[in-house]
Length: 213
Image 1 (cartoon, rainbow, N blue to C red):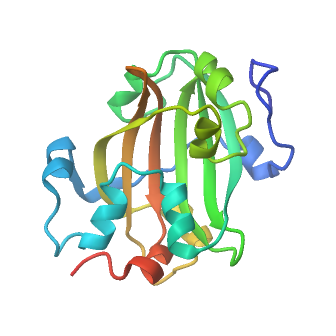
Image 2: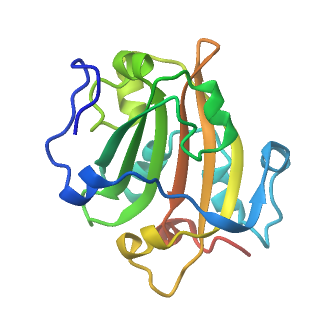
């Protein structure tokens, strides 16, 4: 697997499945979804509990939050990095804020201590921005940016509840087939540097409690 810039470090640990993967995972036909206004107001507690709202609707780094919740180091398993050029990649329309040519990066976040997988994330970067801010894609985004003392604004755009069969086996909760997801832009210096789409595992419920009251 190659991308255009030799300055970006690509991990050697991709599986064959990851190398041939061309699609990305999203919540298809959501049973519920909300927009920026819903996120600003907050959701009814019978839909999403206060603890989950603090996690999903807040502006902190999810990797850092998971580390604090689980008292475990959180590892990034990079499963694919694909140049997509000027393609909109069937992504949320906010991808238009990310300059082409673009690279799509897909990861799992998991506990180094227990091996539990907590989330799946897809992010889209312009090639030039990735060269500047994410030279080592195996690091969590917040770690890479903190190394540069980069101030960030997390601009939440959409939140979703629904199924995503492609992540079910890795999450490992066969009795639960609906998940929460969200997408947002990360801004720095008045410019969007990446768009991220995340899907969260029911495993987080061990630490946050039920997702609804």
